[in-house]
Image 1 (cartoon, rainbow, N blue to C red):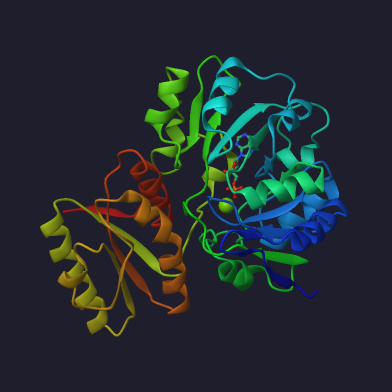
Image 2: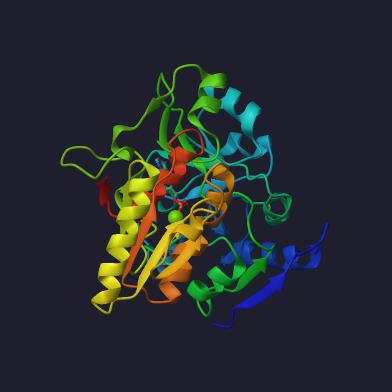
Length: 351
Ligand code: AMP
Ligand code: MG
């Protein structure tokens, strides 16, 4: 298949012709990758089981891992769900459009092919205006997981999508680098108390401010354990995995720098390729391997924004070992550390 790569934004202008063509492809059961404020999504008609199957095939994604349905306005939510719990309504008012996905009891319109066999459906209204325009033009909710090959870091530029999806999908809409860089927060609002299933840019504090008590699915805090199944089926997979072995070093910053330099030097001596993930504040303290800053330690948004691109760059450089500093777990840091520890396969050393 010939994959068309089309720019949709120059400064403030959004190219409607490309969005109209993309919307037609989606209505006809095809696949289009498009930018959202979190990461690039791989879109298909969420109400068409055959189209959903194509997403699983293009990504190499296990079909029990459900898809998020994207909508462009509140009226599009009602047909997809059997009812809207109070917490869901309040959170939608506060944070939609935006980087928040909510899990609702599904209606019969949503096929099990989209929900991985579950009786619930995950729904998000993205903040990116081009994404919302595409959904509105398509006239159907768009199922859109991250537009990466399963197991690779999520794409934050159209070039990342091209690397993984060229030849497999009809079209890629290039809207430039995304803003946030980590996937949406997922909250299950079906029960009495809303439960966080995946941390993201809508933080625990922000959720609690609106919904009061919010629980955290215990399965997202540590390595998979027997009998502890994550409520978001996708969280059980080793997502975001770079080709290299990634080790996260946690502790007092001076000790972290010392240990990473020691480990990097040792592996270089053994003729391995080594990558180091650090921050603007510490970058000039490292001496061995390929050194990449992910942003400012004091500004978590910069770290979220750059993290997946740096992991992909290390894939391209074919490094064997990656040593990474760790970051604050507060606010957006919870999402950053969740993605990093998973990418590391929970391989963390404390110094
Ligand atoms: P992605 O679209 O690649 O960011 O992944 C979507 C995430 O949403 C996965 O972790 C899924 O397991 C999760 N998800 C989607 N639908 C549901 C649902 N109905 N219940 C719980 N988690 C869901
Ligand atoms: Mg994904």
